[in-house]
Image (tube, rainbow, N blue to C red; front, side, top):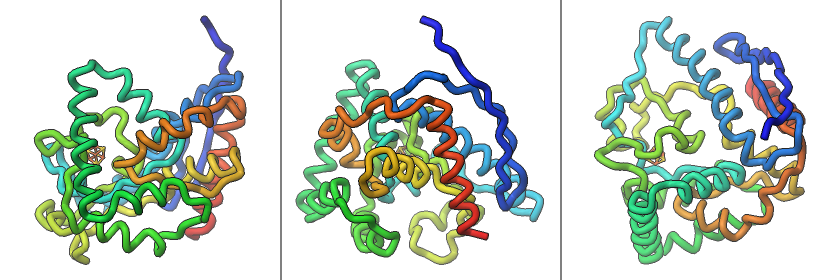
Length: 256
Ligand code: SF4
């Protein structure tokens, strides 16, 4: 079945230069999760500008395949991304899907024993807007466990194509070995002009009237199950893209 699409030309002034993109979006109403790949690609293009800036300053990004040191932090996932992740996991061949679900079940048992699972579920369902400061204690408690992400295999991401936006945005210029303890000030992350999980969660808040929620990755599939009926076609592809752009521009303005 063919669908009509609009092509939009974007120009976004980021601190590392002008982000220019030509984007094709459906003119029809689409589930909010369908805008996720597009928004992630915008975030990646903005990050490429930051990487180029870093290189011009004589530094290099030290992140490489096979180094999964940062895959032990608590990854925040926006609601549209949680729906996308659930769909992609369901589409995987059964052995791979079951492997992830089995690891996830064990991870949740470990988190439960550590007294963290209930807090993560609470965070995923909160009706209150949480700040970075609110999240800090749980982020620290989670990282202290050094639990590898369930999608990490041989220290590489096994869902690389559809990994969350937050995972795409973490790059460092400091030596890789420093990331064995990411709380150390010697770890130098590349700056991120705008966070796509934040953009998507702000869009979600506008569409649903709830808080700009970020869901911890270990409970994201459960959240998407509980809220499956909320992944509706609220707006057309073009309107969703415009909403996302407006939030990107707001986040950029707040930084300058
Ligand atoms: S999804 Fe992939 S990149 Fe993100 S934390 Fe897990 S293994 Fe690492």
